[in-house]
Amino acid sequence: MQAWFEKIKAEFDLNFIQGRRWKFLVDGLGNTLKITLLALAIGLVIGMAIAAVRSTYDKTAEGARPTFGRKLLGFFNGFCKVYLTVLRGTPVVVQLMIFAFVIFSSVRNKLVVAGLAFGLNSGAYVAEIIRGGIMAIDNGQFEAGRSLGFNYLQTMQHIIIPQVFKNVLPSLMNEFIALLKETSVAGYVAVMDLTKAGDTIRGRTYSPFMPLIAVALIYLALVMFLTWVVGRVERRLRNSDH
Image 1 (spheres, rainbow, N blue to C red):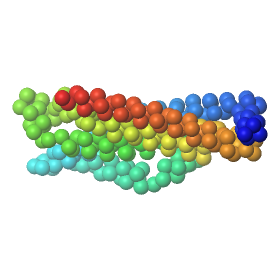
Image 2 (spheres, rainbow, N blue to C red):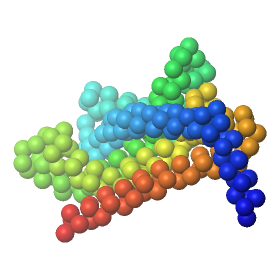
Image 3 (cartoon, one colour):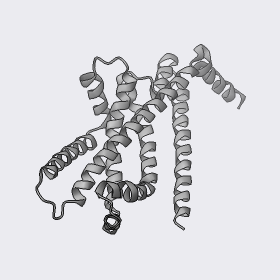
Image 4 (tube, rainbow, N blue to C red):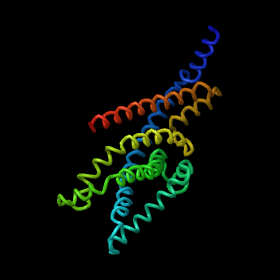
């Protein structure tokens, strides 16, 4: 037992203490959180915009006249469908590499490029979550807005959107958890994220067990914390309905 303990202690010292290698994990965790938060912000903005376009087109389809505005909305709706098909139909790591090595190959700050790539990918999923929430709202809510003298945009702002976010907030937070884990492939474009940090330690010590287990435990702790937050939010939303 003592020999096993001494071995674990030596492994810990080799991987984290010597050369202050623990700083790789700290810096990698910081970069992972930066990428995730940047991608979350971009994904929310893009997702809300696409959801608004697609739901507006679908909600106003019945009896709509072929006006210029309607045709323009149809064009944007078609563009959004292509965007969703491409971004949801291709692997995120491939999208990341295209952004880093093709579209933004001259940009040195790959962390920002990674945040943009993950944000555009997340936006496709956020858009469908929010659109599903909007389409689930009963048409009577829109009619109630019109009876109050609201136009379509005012009805969305004051009546529909508050209900939608209440309904889809748990799903959005679960998307945030998935996004956090997806950023683990950022090392493909030379970004020192948490996973890459653990692999860097492994490459220097030739001892894979300790650094990779540490990375897994850090991700697990983050996901467990966020899952707890999601559970708290869901309970608050259920209680507010009574």
